[in-house]
Length: 468
Image (cartoon, rainbow, N blue to C red):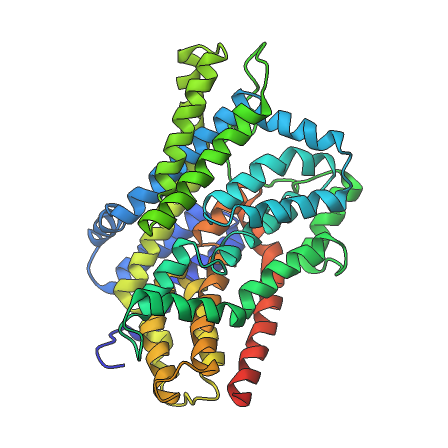
């Protein structure tokens, strides 16, 4: 691990402060701001390093992409509401007289169906199922959990996603892997060993079906919703603007669920999946841009004035802003963590006692710790895969063995753990946004379930390490 620099224990302090303050104050923006400010001071670069960090972290193609993506998603959801599409979809579902259990299972299936984008999935499931789940007295925390657990955990299991391309690309040049095709083959085989993602997705179905009873903070949230009719706790602050929850349909409009809802979703799926197959890169942002423009044209044809369409688009942008602010700060603290060598420090403290038997287990724990601390799964993949995969190939004699597959999947599953439940994670933030749930309430209720999945996964990796 030569060349891996870090600032020692100091490097983990900003992440610890951010998480601790978030739980204590229930204010994510404040917590992230203070953590970043203290972290900048710890680097010894002075106060001016704070605005510099913001500029370097946010002035990137990566952040610009997610910023535009979230804006177009916000516009699309606002259009759905102004056309009455979401309300129409809700009425169709209400006519089916689904039970509370079936509503949760429907949300679970919908989340897995939108596998191509871990960003759109939680927003789509949350916004479309929210009214239905509210009527069924399902807590917003539960809806956010379902939406969150069927986004990143599903995306990392499907070979035709950006996740698969990114992870398989990281394997190129390691051991016997010489091409992207060989990397993808290893990723596909390793899917069966991605225990965390598999268990996390299955648990949602088991909890939704009532096969496994609720426990921990989620049990209290569900009891509150059922007995008191409060889908949000008293004093909760939903992570979404009222523009995306209270926008009424345009007066007198005749809603067409197909043209106003299903057709735009179909456009998103076709462009995202189609570009992935043809260009090897899913053009998700472009897909939502196209769907927004097409739905805007449909709205005009239906008789909605151009001015109203533009006002609705602006409301969509405004409604998604709370999530974008937190995402911006999360990106900044992630940039600070890279600068301080947080991940390098976590990895360095294991190198003296790592053995082949413990490799998958330790790799999973390290990846999970890094991803939870930084809120970045892809950042974790980029850091841990180039270290863990060569070790696995070295131990296996450059052969693609179960040890190699388990180690690759341990990196993928560990990275998803943080993306799934860290208060700093973008998809966790978007799940809170889609369900209109209090962000910290969502994190608190979900963590016990995520830790349960992580516990089972860690045990399985430990077993594999000693069996194979």
